Image (tube, rainbow, N blue to C red; front, side):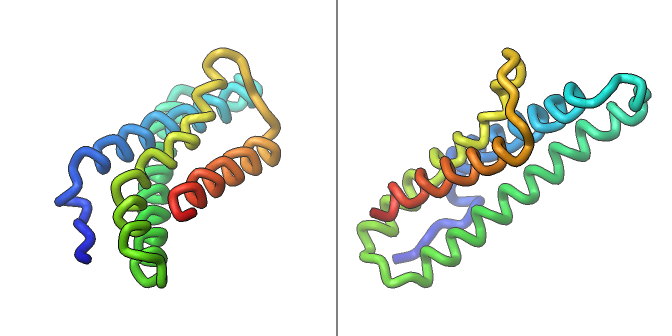
Length: 129
């Protein structure tokens, strides 16, 4: 079984990039909303938003590549690996939870991080089992 590269799987990659951009932006906006306005100037805000999005995208794509390597090298049956490849992008939608901050739903950072990690792990394990 040969696994496609990012270039060969355009639609899932486009969805993943969209998830990364929206989530990265939402993370930064939630972080800014949680701090006193006096701490920021326009330059800080304008710099933090794009840098935060790029960092989030790099982390997201690196995580996906790491998980693909683990799955490729695993002893899982070929049908499970194929299903994982077809649907793994959907598991990243749980990373859109920070968007809830736009309607006023906010969690503490540790609780929010734990919620996202648990939801992501549950979605990933659902694909494997």
